[in-house]
Image (cartoon, rainbow, N blue to C red):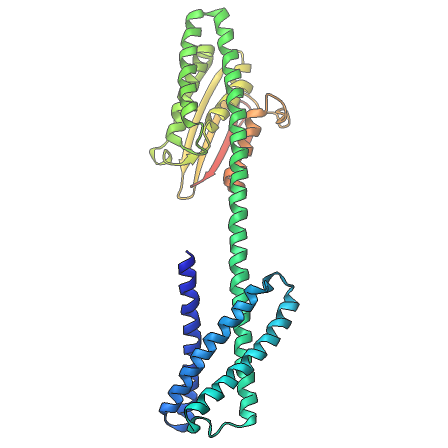
Length: 349
């Protein structure tokens, strides 16, 4: 990485001064109609001294840590040093040229010296501005990446916290259901324990993942619904209608199961005759839309998200926000006077 940066630095140095001298030669050709050997030699000196001057400027910037200075002070120092380097540049150019040939300096006047010193000073000043601009831009990008990495780590920590909260919550509810079965029917309780062990095996497998496929989620959901079916018997009828194209979509683990659990606990189980649970899916190129329809009635405000009964929904909303931001949504409304519709919208990841 360091070697690549050095190669780029020297490459841009050479390219910049070559471009300047090439433009200078073109103007000479347009003015004089020809380019002499002296012009070529003079241009070569400009390139060598230009690279040396700008490299010295960089050395001073790094040696005296100008990057820590205020912008106004940087401009002030840069202007002074650039003027000195520009003057030194043209002075050395004059001395070397005069030592080689009087022909090279025959038209060299005091006015031309001042003009060229100002020109080279301006070029070095602009070089310094570009150098600082590149430095500050790269520094900004580094900080941006660093902040994104920190946010990602914080998000992962928070997400793991939500997951660690959700599993005990789910196990507690399931164990309560099995405990009730023990008193009513020990054989069904045994079947319930078997189903619960299947669920726990799946959750342990998926625990470390922030996203799973809908296909994997449905396996967990069916285990859970079979467990509830043992407890509620004919009071629970469920139906899962998921198209094959939806199975590849990614979503947080136990999300649909949590919504189904909420539908059963707050809707179907409260009805004397029980009811139906229907899970539908549809998708387009950008979103997965899941619909959980259950018998019962939803009273807005009755589900306190801060209470134990509202914990699963609150957790689901938080996980969706952490992973998908505002692109995902979760809504619970009455579909009609006998049914509740929970609508989940998740973007394609």
